[in-house]
Every structure is written in C-alpha cells, then in structure tokens.
Length: 220
Image (cartoon, rainbow, N blue to C red; front, top):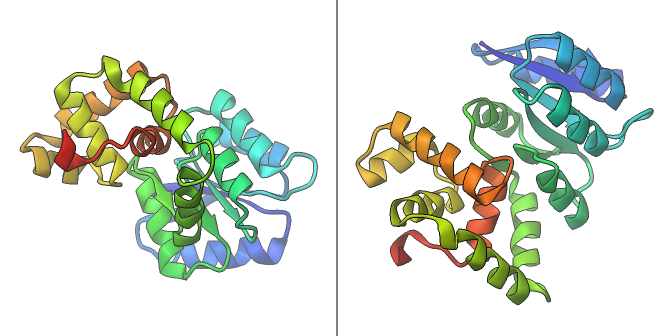
C-alpha cells in the first residue's frame, strides 16, 4: 500500500482528496494536517510514503513545509497541490525538492497517477505546470542556464548521460532500462550516482538540468 499524508487547511478539500485516493486499491490515507507545521510533524512521526501539500496554508505554507520535510523526513516524497498555477510556485516547488506539482482542478485519475508516480520515485508535473517549465526554459536567461547545465554534466560518463537524457524525457526507471537494455536495479544505481554527481535532490531537478543542457536521447 502507498501511505499518503494530505495537508490542506480546508477540511472539505481533505475529505475530497481522501475519497479520491482511497478509491484506489493500492493507496491509503494514513494522516491529515491542517497546516504546514502539522504536516511536517505528522510526516516525521507516521510511516508516510507520499505527502500532498497545499501551497497556501496557515502557520507554515506548503513550500516552507516542503523544505522542512526534506530535512525532517527525507524518505517522504512530496507533491505540491494547489489551485494556483503561477510559474514561480512551480519552480520554487521543484527547487525545494518536490516530486511534482499538481493543480486542484486536475482529474481524479491524474491525482491517483501522480501519487503512484511519486511513490515509485518518479517525477510528475501536471500539464499546466509542464507548460510553465517549458516557458521558463525559453525565457530570457535560458542561454546562461544552458551553459551552466552543460558545464555541470561534463563530469558524467557517456552511459550516465544516456540515463540522464531519458530522465529528461520523463521516463521511469523501468522504461529507461528497457530502452537501454539494462535492469531496473542497474538504472536505479545510475540515477543515484547521477543525482550525487550533479548535486541535486531528485529526479525532477535532474530532468530540468538535462533539458537546460539540451540533452536528448538521440544526441548522446
């Protein structure tokens, strides 16, 4: 079972999310919180796999809670859930180590898919969030980011570049393994090594770095 914590200051929203998630046979909501600080405490004290964090909460907002969660319960995969799709929120969430970004108007199936993806160690961005990221990559300053990204991946081996390129395309470990004719366990080892070499916290940040560097599967 995938154990989920739902953090939102509106009880009705929490109830709706819980109803959607528990309709899936492999997901269980094991904890709830009404603010960011409570979410961090519950995640640290409860066996949680994935935390759904609303951005706008009292006491401590979701992005601050996300940063605290990375320190207090690094095993927990966090998804940011919000009604606000501004570009800055998306990028701040990814910068703080979020496993993904999901809007509250997403379809129920998308919410379930995002939780499963996060629990499996994969990244998930809603279509709206993806558009914001793509827009940012094309915005002024993208050239400087590209140069910095290319410099950061210089230390990777050819095989690590291949794995990173597929990460940038959003492929899971299993799909990456099939593409490269390698086992999923081997891909996990490569991913861990890549994150360490690039000094990033998660697959999302590594994927964005791959995109910034212009790294594509056909070009490595």
